[in-house]
Image (cartoon, rainbow, N blue to C red; front, top):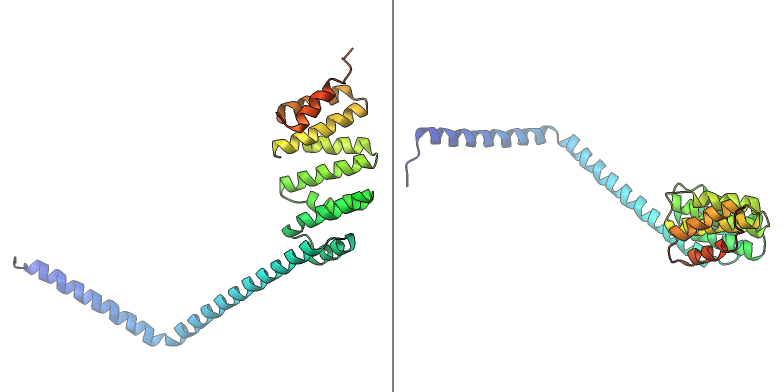
Length: 216
């Protein structure tokens, strides 16, 4: 074994002294700050316990909310549950069900009102689907011009999925034809045929395009 040089011995001694000094300083710090360390650790444990409790409570609330929304079937039950749980994300399907129940009973005004919180959603697709459903309700209420405007708004929203745009464009084209707006009907139905590709909406659009009188 090669003998260690004096320089190596000095480095080793310095390292031992440095390590020893560090340990000494740590022990000194702990000894003189025991109270603060104790209280700090206690506060941290308490904080973690509070966070865990809040998470458990929130999880239980979400489970109860989902169970209540799933169990509600009648208009009265859905109204009561939605009144209790407000506008949470889990109320989406419940609001759609309530709107459909109203519409099935030809209560179109309450049906459209039930969709309002979804229309105001910051999620474009949620808002778009609610607007499209509202357009159907307007049409069923014989409010054809208002329905056309609503269909067109959804069809012209480029951030929405293409199938949703295609369905809305078909609705706008169909109503434009009904209202005698042949050029607008042609525009929206052609868009349906291109964006919908081989979908049901595209096939229906192609059929209606053949019904539009030729421009004079």
